[in-house]
Image 1: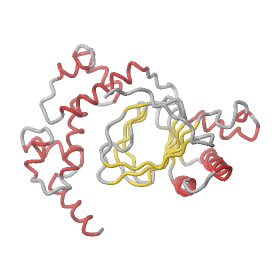
Image 2 (image 1 turned 180 degrees about the vertical axis):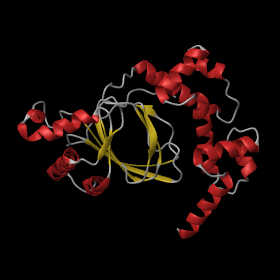
Image 3 (image 1 turned 90 degrees about the vertical axis):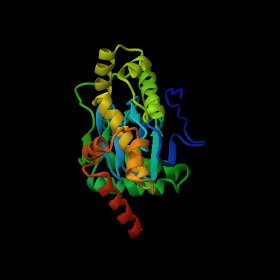
Image 4 (image 1 turned 135 degrees about the vertical axis):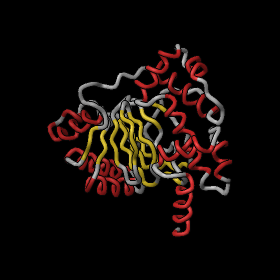
Length: 286
């Protein structure tokens, strides 16, 4: 799978792009683009990997990401339906000089903070979520005015956290993008097999010691943890089916039940059996 920088063009007749995106069990996609991005997660939850920040996001999440900040597609590893409303725009979306006028000072500072990635909480999240929903129903000048209202709310909010350290910008090269995606693609294609560290190092065109250091630096986790987490996410999907737990164990790339149960509990804080019981219980409620 060849992966390049994401190319984004504004919607026809608009100064920015608006996406109402739905997916199920999306691929792990590590990418970047020169546009700023406002993300509202309408449905779904999963792993969050933005720059050097690794964590989790929940349904209702609102984030603002700056340009060329590498991140994974949020649909990776989700169980069931996933939906996002996304705005993508350049800092000059209103013209070369508009951001420099006095009235835009607060929004200009917001854009500066977004370089490190911002996650919003509380009342801010609720207000922006509603406006992002409404944005999909608007056109023309009404849509632009609504976007400015969203930026105003975000710029005035104190309910946020910065996702990456302020004292260092994320240094990400195109070479890193290509290498990380080769690694992710190889794992996706081979996670049911025994992946030898020598093989994945060769895929990355690095020696084994260099690969281990590189992967830990780029993802803040060991390669073994990454593969195990990838396998557990696959097991979670299969636990929504009628497949037996022992079959799921081997189908997900584990070679014995004991190791599978231990690893599953490490990542999900519960056994596969308990996880399935919760899934079935939620299913009866729906």
